Image (cartoon, rainbow, N blue to C red; front, side):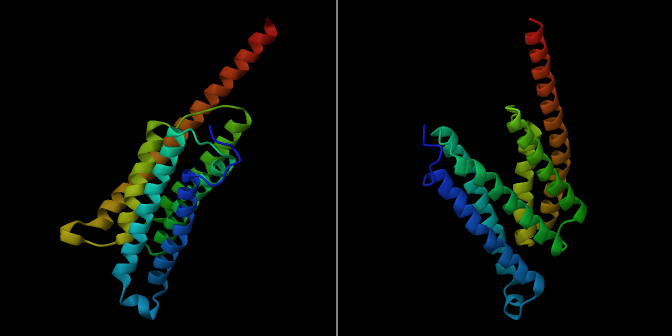
Length: 206
């Protein structure tokens, strides 16, 4: 069990590395958006830089959580920074994709507002000392989102593979899964709160 106030450990390093990658994604996509003179000749390269950087960032997200669970490394810094890094990564990517007209604004609103809503629910759950695990739909939302975003960033059709089309399908699926998972999480939290209230009433009655 690590010191909860420890900062310098492998999961935290991976999280900080993910934060560092975010400006690279934003700069690459912004350069394409504003049509810098030098960027016009390198649009395809910039698209792929953004896409592959997002993929690397997503991989670090998986491994920092996996290592933290396996080695039981739970720190205050990691618990604070990891979800923030995830939100910054996904939300900034979605906003830039919408600015480039590669994803519908309604999809961005659904995914961003869902993240804000779930974050608020988790804060409520933590305050009440309740643990509500991520459901299957939530995992599918993350998976389809992490596939769809880099495909839309690449915006290319190599070897006949229509990345924009596949990315659009994946991101629409992610938005559908996000709505259902938010509902699933809400119901789970309400049921746990009701269960705690009933147990408190029983204990008072005894």
